[in-house]
Picture (cartoon, rainbow, N blue to C red):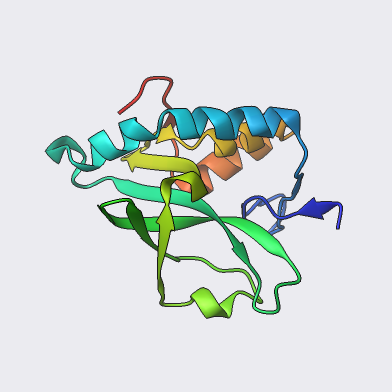
Length: 159
């Protein structure tokens, strides 16, 4: 398979949602994932900071479909970190990934591909989301996607 799903993003070009896919071997995408991994300590620091108690904390992790025929890189809700493990839970699954429904998944740091802290309309991290937004052709598409995700501003500073 030449392409795999990197992230489920709803693109509202019309009333119908579409799934956005990106090639796995993208050098630019690899650059964004590397940046996310390098800056993960900011995510953990923000999670323990009372200033962000109302923020949303997500981690991106690679999972296999129920029949192991496909792989997707999906955002999960971050629940906690204990020792070397991060505990995450799905909130939006594509068809064919039901084995993750209502399950808590335990992963290690090297399995994290990206992090996301959303405080109001401000989004920190989410480097692969920035990459995907930048790849959209028109400002209208970019604005619709940002509005769907509740993003007013993708922050250039760390939380």
